[in-house]
Image (cartoon, rainbow, N blue to C red):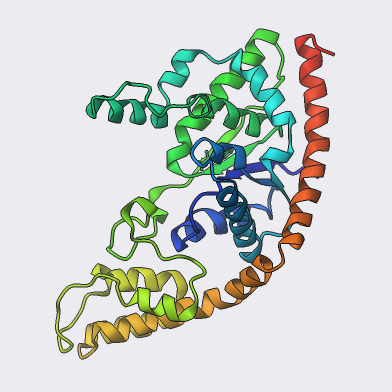
Length: 332
Ligand code: TRP
């Protein structure tokens, strides 16, 4: 049986939060049951914005430990560092020759930066490095190097995937051959969006995140900050219009949800009580993962071993693909 290939890149930036867990990590791990998974740390992508070696290094471990602690099994999925698969950059250079500058001009991230420069009366290209400008090409190389069939990503990456498909099609068209596998985007819909402390979408840019592996005490303290209305204890409350309950549903069983719902509807329950309930279900679910995470973070050699092993296998696959591609293009 030939499984399809699922591939995604994880940028080592920012401490993972529960929005990342439910939105990206958990569904991607579930996908490893059906697909041959290749999940890598997109560390060269991070270089465009982070020039602090220690930060890059630390974030890489954080991200790898998070995914492993959440249940990513390196025996079932190839887990590697992008920077350790040099064929990626070989293919990326090739793809540049098939990518029009106009396509890159339309990339959202680049356009947003130019626009903000214009608004601030700065030179249009202020702070734009070529890594950022050609980011979609490197991403296309990440994907096309491994003959990816499906690529699970958030909505913000949809345009990058369209560009990947565009670039791959132009190669295939020119050589009249399926040189590169056209990937299918698996875009996560925003209906699964996890809300943050203030009820808006959980996002670093809103400063409303709940980090996944906060120590219990700090987690409890943070959850006490979930924004609620100002109803009194006696009042009957609507669980379906409540941030606490929305978060509670992510962690609680149906039975637990029904119990808490009744308390909302009966009146006589204060917000402090609901927050404590939320803390307890969340803490119970994340505790074993947090333990695993801390164990991994204190054993970086172990993480290195996994990433080195994965990278070695990834290089072998990538080597074969590049041999094939270079041959078709007329190179030895
Ligand atoms: N650009 C993605 C992000 O910012 C990360 C990424 C890099 C990626 N290469 C990839 C995702 C290849 C999917 C496939 O989240």
